[in-house]
Length: 156
Image 1 (cartoon, rainbow, N blue to C red):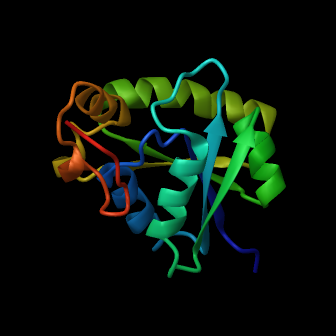
Image 2 (cartoon, rainbow, N blue to C red):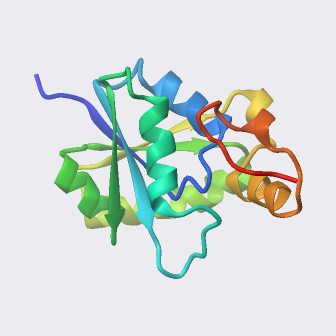
């Protein structure tokens, strides 16, 4: 039987408790989850990739079902590189679905071997997104309630 490997792509700038919830729940569905930190030169990030990668590795250091990679370019190319036949995406609302559906359909056209699997976030995480957390941090707020304990940053 082939291993069920899912790629969970994103910039994770920063990774939130919502992301962690998706990973935790997906562990029941997949043999391995590869968290793919996408490098997008057109996106300016708040935290450098080394810091984001270190946080995620620290979060899952005792979990052999999760590994972390960096990738540039197409998500489906990363799927091929890591042997993933699934792309894991978390959804908070219908706007996320509309956006993600188009990407999933294009990915399927480009790489038919990959199935996109959508998981709805638990209702408690619906308002939490990396962009909202970044805005909170940029404006001196304390975002620690929305971040895993391993994500350390200076605020205020």
